[in-house]
Image 1: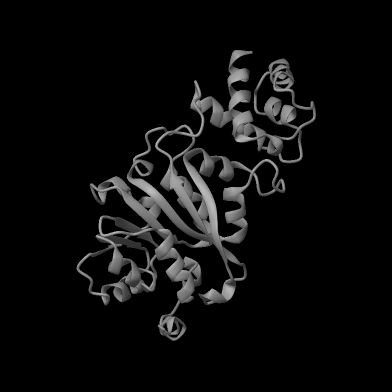
Image 2: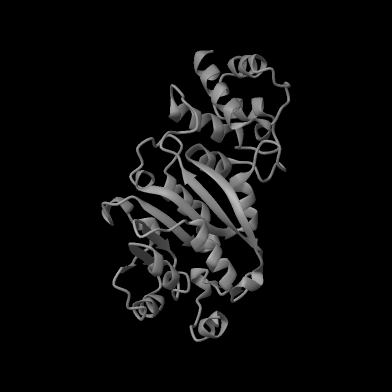
Length: 279
């Protein structure tokens, strides 16, 4: 069994980069098996760190493109010396996936938790970004995130209200999302203060809903979650929607008058957006 812990200790982790290296061999195996990697696959690994997952990925994939921001980590990755490994020293948020390869890619990512939402938005594009260049390249995403964020990604309108929000809608609008497994803090070095979870996202070729105006839908959803403690109607009105139109749309959906935004399903948000356009 590889001694990931002692190998990780040799490397000086940087708090400012949110570095926590995955040292649990069982979890690394689960990442590999759930990605269903074949010799046909090109993998883009985000935040490979010192390469514990990378050294497994290169065994199974046709090609691995590792995107790493830390210069010292890049030097460690270069020691892997694998013919099918390309290392890119760059910030993922400044990287256009369409420029990296002509192949479709699977994403494997163990990313700093403080930039999880921006990275997901960068990979998927916004709700109304129907032809996002990054998303068009991706078939699957295996993502290690804070457990709390994983719960938000897979939430529904029946989940605790603080879990269901804009990240939920964005993720599920463009992907089928599920939690593969929970991952304890001792699976990392240094151990983070929170538990983690491995999330699987199967990218859709079409958005979840067919709508007449996706920008209007995005505005509707954003408005609904703009003030958590207020009712849906008040949120809409405060965001510039007409009061009578908002009341009428809520009534037509057979929703209670003082319902809050987090109680609407994705489909109901779609219907609400269409009704607000008509009224």
